[in-house]
Image: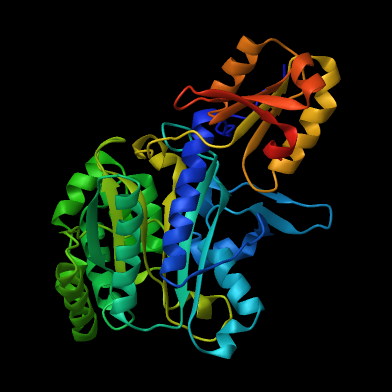
Length: 404
């Protein structure tokens, strides 16, 4: 028997209901904020992610599904969504058009990592990207959008904030962090030794317990911000306070990707492990330029849907629509015609197999239909249809003409 690949799961039954409820909820909220849907390809040039996500990242170094296609192109399945949206933004010359451009997207991403609860090799993200707004108010709006989505889904969270500085303050901090790492060279893991020479700030994202303890004493970027970055971060905190968004400062929060600057944020939950991230993002003002576009301020976030599935509080379900079935083979054609007519205005489920009333009632209940509608030999002869309201349990027989 052929099975699905490890870390690549099917979505069906109750999971499918939760999945679509999340997509519908997040989509509606993003649209309320003025965002528009964008779809980018699952397959992109590998160079896109090497230049954006960064070769020092675990994603590029260890986790990409990368291969040479039949045209001798170096390609990979997308491991995250932001780079593809930025590529589309530049390719469509929106960077040269000026103005504000706001997008949301959802779909599968692929990373070759060890599968575990809430972490798969094929997983789904919902993401939002904003281009052209150089204001900390846009950062705050992103955070408030995530909070709205999580609150609507009934998911509790803690918000963690940090600032990653910019080109004015990062170089000096980078040197002080390297000096700290040099002093502790023998105590850090091999990944951190590699990152020290490629992108030192990424060591703060290390999951090695020994490294985490060591970095508690590392220099803090928040203590080395330039005046502009410090003013922005203070303004962000005030905006969140004014809008009743609680937060914690995490000086080691750097996010897992190389393209972030200034604002970085994560929403975490205690319900899927110890302080596990369920959403995160930040500002990436340099990424458009890194990918050969015109310098454009940008900010965004992404949410891993599978990590949220068990946390979603589903709304109360209610019965809706019709179930139509036949008790005799001769009635099946009429049942099909009636179902096709009803589907134009209301949800309608049909069973093509002739069977007894009890089996039809059971099937209608499973379909969560409000009305069970049955045609047998007597109804066929009288040109009627029998109906039962599965909510109040009332029954009646009406003419076919009135049912249509």
